[in-house]
Image (tube, rainbow, N blue to C red):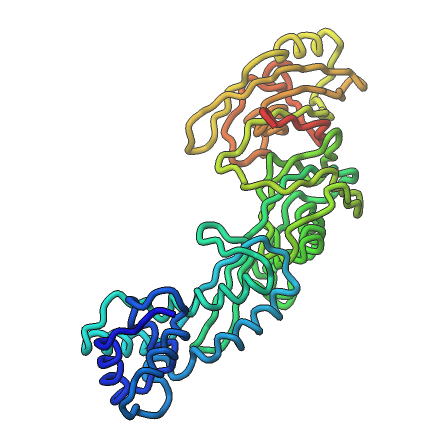
Length: 397
């Protein structure tokens, strides 16, 4: 047992004669006593003090330190529903706790003592670690726990999870992204149940519902790798995406468990460390149905194929710098005198309908021009009514 010097005993007696302190707040003022918790140090000091001490609630914490075990029990009860590997405790204290401790230390020239907030988080952390077998992580914890001594509330904040997946879209008519409510335009109203989104089903809505249920989470935020028309199918290996899982209770999943709902299939899912800050480069293989304003023949289609095969197209966006996209493969098959089916592989991010229709069409309203394009090369107006995604290849996946 560490010895307590006479100078510490005398100073502690002077303090306790005027200021009632709990054992935690008393022990915290004397960091030179090594080897024990502040509570134990406070008990030792109090035992050595022979003068009459002032009675009452602790001057610094108003006896809040005595609720450490109670607050820890509340935390442990809430943590039962969560999966986590490590954690960090945070605390919100009444401002006057710190002010009273600072004034006491200034008056008696007490230096080097631990702050009350630090002790609270440390002691609760010890209890949680002991009961759960999980470790404290000060950098990137799975779980952050905030103890609010002002309101008495316990707030659990699990770290977001990130997943990578691929989906197939086997039916037409589903937009990729959730659309804003037409009535309130995203502000929230009774018609959309104050979500701000249309009740119309989308790929995003179906995938989000599955991920929320799978991880028992509050929400899911998506980062798409390309997009398609609501009338397009997504086939092959599916379109890749990333999702941030918001406030998950579960941090593991059976990656072989797939989803199939209303023609949307979650083909692949795996947990990843993070979502890339920069969108990855990718290529898409597309099948497009083309309608021509005039009659076509095999010779014209041959010229179209030869011109666009292994070519580059220039994209001139509105109010942005021009850029190029590559067409790696291009094949076209005649359906009848005014219709054809084009199958091609190109860089991701190319507006398919504008690539076919040229800048004289109203599709792709944010693009000014793509050249060369199907209409330009074949010498007549061409329109794409539907296109399907046959495959998406992410480079360096």
